[in-house]
Length: 537
Image (tube, rainbow, N blue to C red):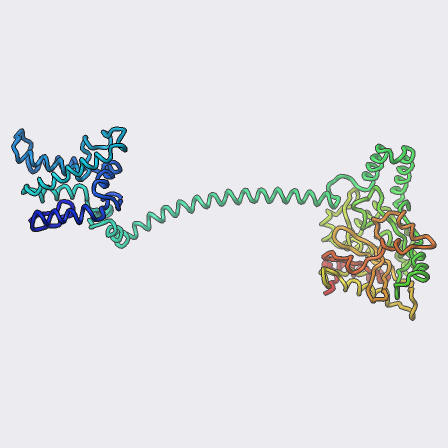
């Protein structure tokens, strides 16, 4: 029986062995034992092993051990030993050993151009090897030693068990040593988690630092916007702006000194100098609606009120104070408030700031006071509906603050705001008159960033509503156009605001309802400790 030294299969005769070698190993697919390369012929796989797996190929050393063990070290040069040496030499060539004559280190630089000759030489040597091994009795022992050296079986690194192939060894390790593998995974996982934790901490610190920076910038921006940046108040701004006007040639120096003297006197007395006031507009509107406005079915006008606009000293932040002056100008002409407003004149803006601070000291609106650091004088701090309510209540003027906190109509409009104002003024409707001059004071109207004063409402022939509004941002020359005998409809454009013109998210109004007794004032002061505005659903 003959044994194939490549796959170990036994055959009965030499012709059968040749047929086996030709069919199984020469024509069928050959696979590299180191990297599983396939799809090449026998010569190509030999060259691949010789060049790609030079360090892994230790066949030569194993053959030397085989020579020493089986044949001994001798100087005898008989035919048997020579035949055995020929087999070893051929075996090294067939198994791609690291023999110096065929190793990668000793290959000439023009190997790519001599591959064909190299393959032919290996094929010749392999055929000689096969013929020689057919005559040797020790073929099986030599083959077994060589195969074991080249194809050593995998052993378990944990328990030493040997398996037939790497797949079996992998199954063995996963089933018998799963706890050890999991421990290794846990160590790696713990290291990864620690790294991830440190990176997350760094990212959190960076994010918090950036948030703090942005928060500080936003806070400083709000301070500047609401006049709480310690840059001075009305007086300082008035002087700076007048100096700018002089430097630009828009104000003569003599005018500068005249206005400055008037301002200092006004501040000393606490009374507005009247430089921004326009009177007589309500009377002019009554004439216009009575004689000209043909597209209006009914119009309700508030009690007489003066218009005040912002000056150089309060431009950009004084709208709330100017609207209070408008409202107070109406109350001072109403006998209902003679007792609580006795002897008062229209105060200047610094005086209004002092009056609100006094109301806070009495105990009104402590929450609002703390938000403004309990200080308004010497600042450009904005005031809103809450401060107007606080000031009026401290003066014993009965009023309500109502919050229209969300739109009630399509496209962000507030039709309920218009309906409420209509009900407020129309409660004194007299017959079917087109123009109704009510005794109701004007309404303070606040939204984000600005405030105005409502002095009336139109009901047009198509049943739509239109508010009549005094804006402190409108200068006196524009308002004085309404005092002409022949008012043009275009002049009222600055007063008229339809439903589609008021689209801020939220509106607040302060509506005056009468005078308070001293007892009612005390009750309202106590109620202001937990003050909340009345909300319209």
